[in-house]
Image (cartoon, rainbow, N blue to C red; front, side, top):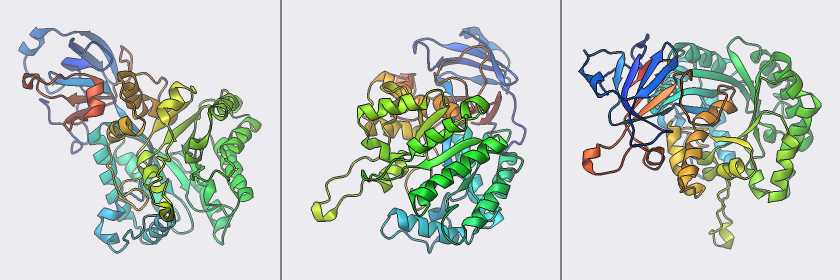
Length: 453
């Protein structure tokens, strides 16, 4: 690209025009001139070759050899426990067996060492790398409990403000620890009850499956829904994170409780996200259709977290040979196409014991999803892109539609992918190529400003 604006500029330039660019939802043999006024697309016109003869202007981007698409979104990412495996401060916390219990233990040990500067440093890495990848919206989980108190929340709010001109960081106060089990339950509830009322907090979330039994898990769910309703917050549960067919699925209780508390009547502008839900992979078609019917008009989205799920779920019985390894992650494209559910995919963790592998780039999930979900058609790949873009924004309450079309009046939250040079002979300029082979060079526009290039 011809402009070098970026995160080091606290007041990034507004973009007025993007010239000669291909657009993800249009014929790849056509080029367009896109005009932007403040934070919205003001016009999209066929490319005028004479436009490049005008004097150079830093607010005008040369889009030749690029593909324009809606920006990316993290519907589910943990801001406070990222990069623990990459930070010398935590070098002694080494993965030895890689199971969930160990991940909880290592993370708990790390949390006892968290301090404000440490949280700002690692959280800043995550946000900056995400923006460079094309992310303009993210739901960022910050834990609140007796161990960290408000440390993670306070750092998260600082980061939310620091990067407000480059990315919308939606803070979710999150109870990873039990609210109704163990010696810290009462303190955890008190702290979460205070945290959800903090200015700048938009979401409340919890992890019912860490409770000691199902009765207390149900209390966790009810308590969290009531707080979301009372204080006008989006709702997010880590739910049904197991592949044990003998266990009851808590998703039914969540849906029933939301209907019982009249969520659609009084909370129609606030969304509900159910993350992980790996146990639902054991549903038959009839159970999926029944779930769709029970959800009704509730604004529920499921978020699959494949990098974490593949690492944690489906571990084989070594005594039986060790070859049985179910994917153990929600079949997101099927849920969208066959069962008409709202769904997206998210990164979840980066560089910690829950997910040691992967990066901050949501597009890497879409690319990996081609194999995970065996999604090789053009339509399937467009859905995968939607799942890390517009569908993800809708899930967290930051979008109104799930398709990838760009038109006048749309918010100017965009990513420009630099494609292979056409002189190389490689076909270029389609979203399918972007998903299969994510381009390294990207420029990012948020609310009409160039925030990374």
